Image (cartoon, rainbow, N blue to C red; front, side, top):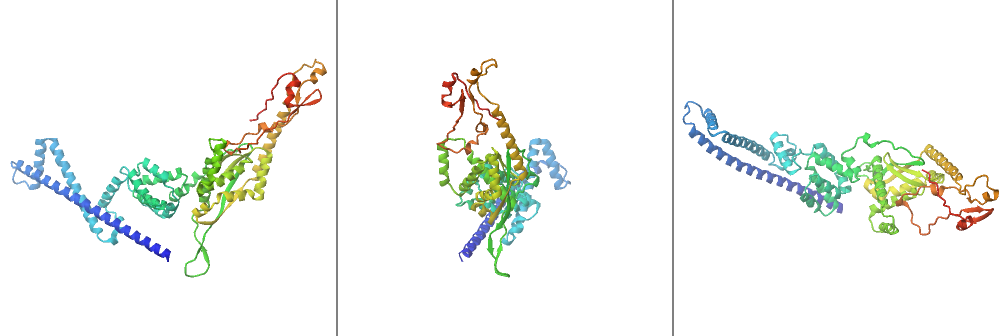
Amino acid sequence: MAKDSSRESNESLAREIQCLEREKEELEQSNKRQTLEQRVRELRSTVSSLRSDNRSTSSITDGRVSAETTQARTHLKSHQHYGDSDAGGFSELHSALKESQDNLRALSSHHLHSSTPSSSSGRRRDNNVNQTRVVSSESSAESDGGDDVMSQAHKQAIQENRDILVENLIPDDIFNDLISRKIFTTADVSRIKDRNTREAINEELLNHLCRRSDRAFYVFVQSLRRTLQDFLANRIDPQPSSKAHKKKRKRQTGELNISIDCDDVIPHATPRRRGRGRGNSMSKALCSCQEVEEQILTMAKEAYRNIRRRDATPAAFEQFRKELHQTNEIIKDSMEIMHTLKILCRHGDLEAISEGSVQFWLRCHSQTDAQALWGMYVSGKLLRLFQRAFVTPSLQKRCRAQHIRLRVYIHEEEYLCCLAELSAQSDRNVRLGNNCTIGRSTPHSEPQKKRAKAVSYEKRSLDPYTRPLPRQAFQEISKNLKVHLDMSYEVEGSTVPASCMQEKAGYNFRVRPVHMC
């Protein structure tokens, strides 16, 4: 009962709004007609006075000439007598009078057609030339710089997706773009923002937008794409399929490509209306799989942008942890995605996030990292991780879906290639480490005892030095992080710790690690 009453109240409000708009239109037309009639009366009085003056000056002409010929000859003589200025003024008055009479005829016919309320829809679709001229002049005076009115195709695209735009549009940055491109004025925006809820603001925004030109439509779509609302922009202005596929990214050494696809979108089960059959039926899903992937890509890029902080101090990260408890559901979803990205970064550096489903390019540091990531993929843990991070309640609500199922792909050939590259790189680092020794360069002619005093260190792998540091935004803060270099040195057959190395050797030297590119 409450829903029926609310629906009836909404319908009554809609009817009242339509009646008020119709009345406002008729009042504007009547005011316009009164203004034009007053202007016609003034022009008629001016023309009659000019005609009387012309008749007084044309008394010397032949009486057998008709009234129209007399007026024409009088006009020519007055043109020769008074000069070009008077003739130009009379021609301007004559053209203005003719234009006013045409407008008055158009308005009178328009007023006759709009006398009954039932003819309001037919009035909007009228193709009369004079009426089109008047309406276009009014709309150009109201809109931006004299452009044509919005085409019917663009209006229909907005009306068909009006519910989706009203529910999901975030208008704050869009207002700035519309003001800067001179589509709306600040007064228009302030009137729109006077509404109580965001849905009411979006309704008023779309109402104002439909009264503008096609340029306003394109600016609106461009602003949607700039503010990461591509799924709404593609609803009203779909992009060609060729733009969606960009140039393939060149793979780097040790990289793995993790692709996420939307496998299926299961809509909400809604009760069937009274009629044939029993049980429930599935309502139509709002979003397709491609649009779900676009939304996931937007969420991932937004989270990736948030975690790349310039300030890497412990205080900044502590404040960053506190934000989890002080933000709304959208930021919480971003935090969940950030947590997933940080789990990925334990196995390597996240190099890029790109289109083509949703692709994560992860550069592994060692064979162990690549094998651990492959184990997560084979066991299904990676799929569960992405499913929990990206398929949030807000995404399901936005897509009106009961369940969204994802798929994760890592190609086995690419994994084996990554293992081979990391193995070759590790072998190359070991060979370089074995060739690196430190000691006094003594000629072969020296005795064996002196050569035995040369200090050398135990050959160890240089992996801790050649391993690249992770991105600053993903570095974990640990107070007890220490690097232990427990190297030992042999001097005359005895093992000497590194701390007393200089005292036993008798001279200073420095260990310099070798960095691999």
